[in-house]
Amino acid sequence: MPEGDTVWLHAHRLNAALAGATLVRSDFRLPQLATVDLAGYVVREVVSRGKHLLVRLTSPETTGGAGWSLHSHLRMDGTWGVFRSGQPWRRRPAHLIRVVLETERVAAVGYHLHDVKLVPTAGENELVGHLGPDLLGADWNADEAVRRLNAAPARDIGTALLDQRNLAGIGNLYKAEICFLRGVSPWASVGDVRDLPAMVQLGRRLLWANRERWPQITTGDSRRGRQVWVFERSGDPCLRCGTVVRSTRHGGGPIEDRLTYWCPSCQPGTTAPAQ
Ligand SMILES: [Zn+2]
Image (tube, rainbow, N blue to C red; front, side, top):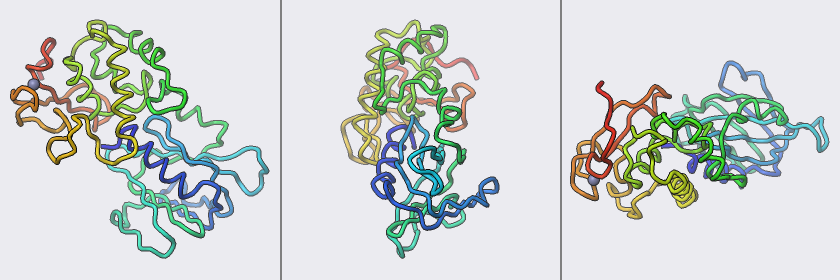
């Protein structure tokens, strides 16, 4: 599931492949950007901001000044591949390709990307300025994340953790795992959560620990089927107590965030409202 750590790793890999290089060809297979040609642009850096990815570019006409930012979001199904020049692009079917950025050495191919936009770098805030503290950002601020969560104490903690305006980077997997590890029902009110700062710090620790690898492991066990406590394990026994893990629809956010998973024994208290 692409969450903040996955996007961070994509940005890291893309930055290693592209930063400092001049694009020799670009290809946008999207109606709104079909006529854009970034040949001659220099890639300054590739960064993540929460679950958003930004490729920052300098246009050949500007010297050291204004640049452009190519924004994208992976949602549930997006990914990037980096291929050496001349190597076939085999990561996903070709019809899913949305963006190609080529240098003399590599091709960065974005599959099934969402919210692809090209904006002046100075205007990035229109796309990412609403985000709360980035769990993997250099400017991570746990106190500010706690303050934002506490601003709506009646809200359920599951939805509040997913709200990128509170803290940026948590998706459905980490939401479920953080609630499990803290023994908190996803439907508990924010105001009823014991030790909210510890919950926020746990989120930071989990994303940080997973940022340099593709699998998302919250149990400390990398074996298949043992990597997470409850996410996508409904019907299976809880790895801690054996109670059957449950799942149900939760909230009205993006479709990938609508199912929540929990262990009724390890996470007692407020239960799911009747469906
Ligand atoms: Zn349990």
